[in-house]
Image 1 (tube, helix red, strand yellow):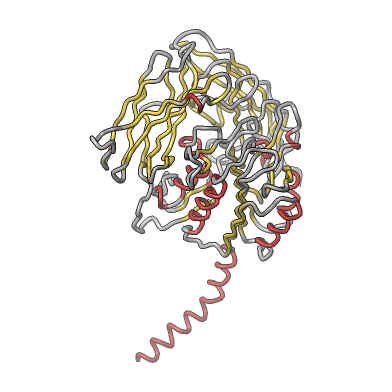
Image 2 (cartoon, rainbow, N blue to C red):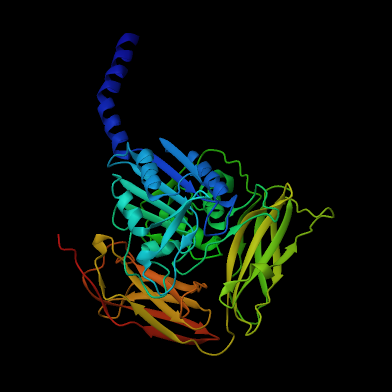
Length: 493
């Protein structure tokens, strides 16, 4: 009897094997190439920021339960376009149509305002030689890699490559279409910042890489996973970055991508959180002039030294050199004990009593500051008016992966509600509700949005004419603006 039972099990396994192999092939393999440059010819060195960025991102990828067939890091070893292309070919030479190739680049981004975004690019450098790779270069090289490409660009002005966060709009869009998923640390008109210990010791990284890693892997408790289902999508990752990364405005393509899983983990497995401060929550990040106090709470995982840094945005720049550092001396020895904490700090936004501020949390570990998180605070005027205007494109084809750019211009910080209206003036999609504006370095001051052509139920809207409606409020008075019509076109297959 036992013989027949074993034979039956073996027969079932033999019958199932082709299906298991088929499912495995369909899922595909994942490979990653991480490139970091810290030493430059024409720009200031950033060591050890890029080197530490590679370590943060690599550690996150290694802990993905889907397992990477390859995670290769290259630090200061690529200084020509040819070397870059060879590195991509070597890392992804075995990729197939069902595979996913992840490319992360940490370096200086190069872009000048009033110049075509097609000229924007990234420096490859080893400290003695240097080359600029543009969006067209990235597109050409990555188009040769079969399958899906996930591109993470950690550099100043990185959003210019995908045509986002630009004052004058985009002349060309790179890395678009169904094969590409892209995350950028900043808009096309923005700088991207890193932190570093005063003595340039072995600490420091970009704020973007730190928030990304803490949001994905177990060191931060998989904080980006809003529904705790073990799958962190591109949309969840972007939402987490937008909330916790304050130094610039991250950009993403495509918008609201709910199906692409950027990171996966076992939600039932025990988690050993290494991050000292987690669950940072603010009572409100959209304030009104005269409200000088900001209330927030967080969880301390272990006894540590904690500092709050307040940085103000003035004269069009973050004033890091004038940052206010406030120690939290809960204990006599200058430390803070584990547990849930509630704090209130006062802001001084300066002339006009409105503007932007950034609250950052650092712990001091082994004599060096370790970044723990941040929030952008938007302080709107207590009275007065807002001058609103809207610029959009003329037409787009969502089914081809195109998005409609929306530039909502406003002359003061404010909370924005953005709706897409159909030809009957009915809302088909809400892109933002009372969302605090950000200092995106756009000229004139504005907030950028993108519509993927889908309605609130996730389906593509029918072809036709649409408009954008933007609303805001100052001291109970409402201000509204509506764009000129644009066309949603059907794909011609």
